[in-house]
Length: 434
Image (tube, rainbow, N blue to C red):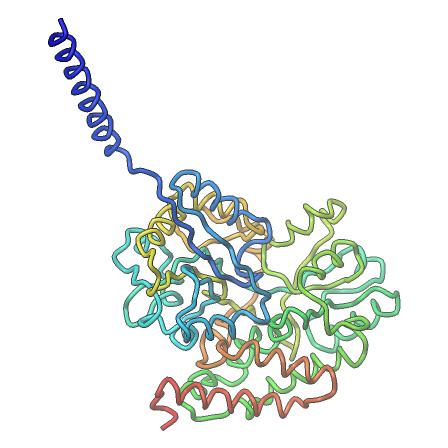
């Protein structure tokens, strides 16, 4: 009996072991969740303020076990910070940077720092118009949801109507409108030097206007056949931007103003005009329902501009850090974020953009935008067509803030732009500067 009992116990033990092994074998059919945290470095405006990116990252973590640690830095600090981190090997696993067709190498040096995504299935689905902004030497390095970006002046229709004001098409008309609004105590035009980049927009978003007035300007600049300081029309725009400051049309103590505060001020009707991109007015309406039907738009009339500036990139893109220990997890995150249903979810949950850089997703352009664009000429903005402008964007912002404070002149700003272009060209070994 004792031997029989021992034999039964041994049989039972073997059965338990085999069952356990069988259970482990079955589990290989589904990949076990990972326990990895990816750092995601970005600037404030690099991800939607709606929180959709963080919300989706939480769902990704729940599904895969791969967590995303967002490290959000103020816009004014991000470019310098990421350059420093790249040089010391301390960059985050995922790097979020503003992109355009010309400055990727200057800002990121992708061959040394970014994961090559060329062979990923999603790379073939991005819009061909945006691919040059996330590619270098025929290789794709980035993932972006970038809309085709246009910066319009958005205005409060009620204020305009009450004051009998018409949409301006020249600078003098623009100044007249701002002056009439200023007399009521409302801030005519929201300026946001505190964000570091916003004050630079008028200078280069009106680039197609410069090219229209003097054809070949972009080509001459790229071939180092002329200086930015020789662009009289650009100098005029800088002077006009400064004149608004001198006349008080940005309000009092505006130097520390931010873009985020401007959205709220516009929604509360404390500011009558603000620069925004198509679709983001819905964000204002969501926060201030009384603004429904009260928001109009027009092209920036600095320098008498009436040409729409189009940026085929101009928004942030995600890049995987080539030196990360978690390359496969980064690729897994990018693959998940670029599933059709997740692209649609990001589009619907973002800041209201009306287009996205994925042809499989239906755009949301409204008839008023379509009609407006059909009635005006358009062209590529200067920073997306002229080398070594975008990499110094934040430096130019500092110069403009210095001008607002009375410490710099328009001529000095232009000279600084040329000096920095020459330095950047030398680093890139650009033959046009030999």
